[in-house]
Image (cartoon, rainbow, N blue to C red; front, side, top):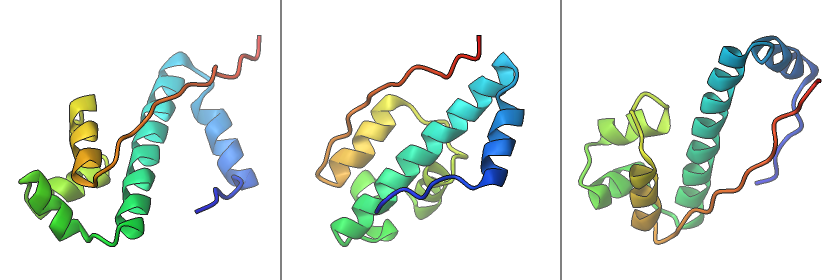
Length: 102
């Protein structure tokens, strides 16, 4: 699924949130949670597995999976790996430098 470009309003919100170091940290945390969630949801569609089946594969309740997917769960890299393994996949991590305004 192709990524949509951000709206002008989204860019303004991002700029406001990332003015401070604390704001940047929080923004990047939420961005990563969203990115992982989007990848899992795309993979669920791709392999035609529903959330109930994934929860069962992980030996989780559906509530635990929902908390993982909506960012309420305290997630570790091990947990992320477990989710992708349950989907017969692996995840790779890359990085980009933060924009530096000087």
